[in-house]
Length: 95
Image 1 (cartoon, rainbow, N blue to C red):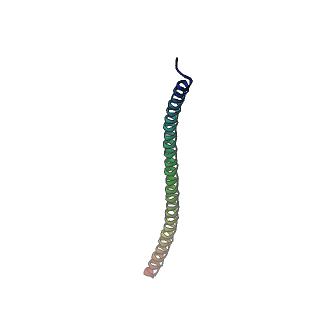
Image 2 (image 1 turned 180 degrees about the vertical axis):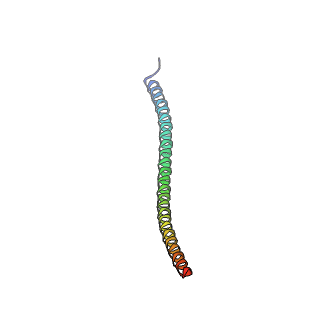
Image 3 (image 1 turned 120 degrees about the vertical axis):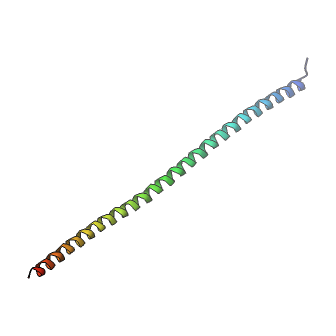
């Protein structure tokens, strides 16, 4: 029969092996969670960059829209002035 000391050593070794096994499992789980968290952070950063790009694009499109409106108004005014000048010239030519 094993002595009391041998039984304690055997129990201690078994407990240490079990603890090591669970520590390895915990380390794998921590690595997996860390990897998932990093993916999530990258996704959030990517989404933030996309949102910023969309905001900038929106600002540019607004500016382009305003410029198009101003250009349209300027073209209308220029057309009206040209038409008015043409009428004045034709009235003078008739005399």
